[in-house]
Length: 258
Length: 258
Image (tube, rainbow over all chains, first blue to last red; front, side):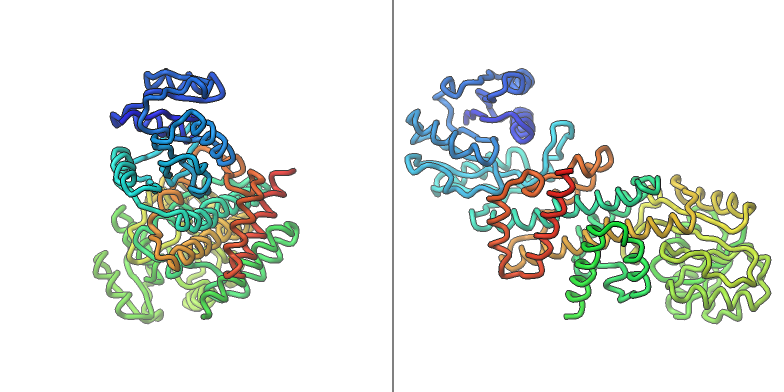
């Protein structure tokens, strides 16, 4: 199976590298930015282009690793090339398959559920890949491709992916903000943030074997009102953090009272 | 140095085991619950007692790994034994040294900054130990003891420990609640929570080399109002989660606007 990779940002970069390492044939890489296209093309020894009109018409699959709001536009452009019988997939967790224009016959999703940055090497052996397709023939194809790069492959529908995406915001984006809050509290007292990292790692690691409800610790679940009062008094100078603290304390108390 | 360990719960159990493994002499273990006292005493081959009156008077240090609200009471009892010249320490992150009665001359803190459960083996090579003492002679002693069980030892005062404890609630207890929220959203749709674990692990691992502010991703920091609107509409049936979502979205937007 020959693939054209459209997009060479965080997701495109790491997918391109991983496909190449796993022996999947990427015949062309596209990015609007020449430096990005060439950086990836050179690394995986394939042609790089910056003009969609020059896209190779002989691929079996076109993988769109572009920003969520560019997917529809790129798909429309590919449709205008007469790619009705080509399989076109996007890599987005937040975008339903309805983004693809009605003029396309074969489309799907190839969504690696991880947060990528150029500078960090992802561990694909541990990254779930969520696949879906509009046709029953293409689903096994995407499954097979996903298993080439990861042992964890899930068939996830649009509706399910939307739910996973909301949940991911709660377990990834919001905790990260709390990490920033913790850091800023320590920074102000010139205390090193690294001192909390092992605790944070353990909080997540525990979930490999346990349930977060059972794992809940801290003053709110203990009903330790003296500590809560002391913490709130300390937080008076940080009204935003105080509000978060109160909402969490109420939420945790409520969840464990039921 | 001979140590008596008072308390054989989560913290006492793991500290006792670790001291023993590292060749630190524990001459006695106390717990009010006989089964707990004996379980640890047998494991580390030392005497176990359930009556504080039988505490060995020849130790150099008495380490109180008991509930926060029992520290004062136990310390008072030890003071009544005439332990003025013995070093007495507690292991609590939330308790200032003022908990020790004025009749004691030598006291301190030996606080391993980690969340412990009986069933999970902690990685002490990666656990910060925060020490403090009321006398300048005892601080090097506690430092030395801490370095026996961990390479990461910090001198942390009462005031600093109080700040770290607030920050720990933000980076440990509150994220754990968010993990529970994520899980409950997935559970309702019969989606496996394990699908999000690699993402959660990576969110924390990234902080070994990066700053949480720089690492922030998601719709709030992108200003992706279409996704936020879609998420809020999904969350209408979960008013508590909706409120959290709104507060986080506002907080993240505000932090990154500045």
